[in-house]
Length: 120
Image: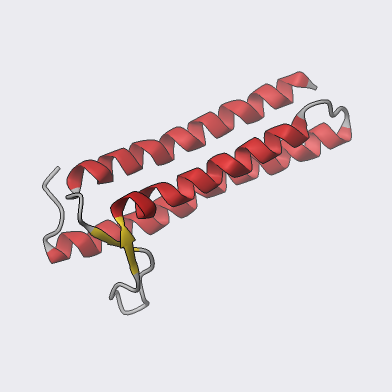
């Protein structure tokens, strides 16, 4: 079932490119010493913060590691196992950018309110 492997690869390429594009856009709007909120409390105040490089690159790097792990498990499978692993790869390829963008939008809103972002 090599077509499923190629389709899974294509979905992960799209997912990683979405995260990389969002990170690149946010990176260009921040100074090098910007501390990015890693989580936002329910009241809208920022929780702990991390340096720009760690904040913007940690989740895409984790996603890349997960995708490589799933690729290693995908090779040589056939039949039902290939179909199941394709479902896992497709689902996770959709979830990682969703989680990343759901975190990035409020983090950028906090930085915008603090005046730490350059205009687009």
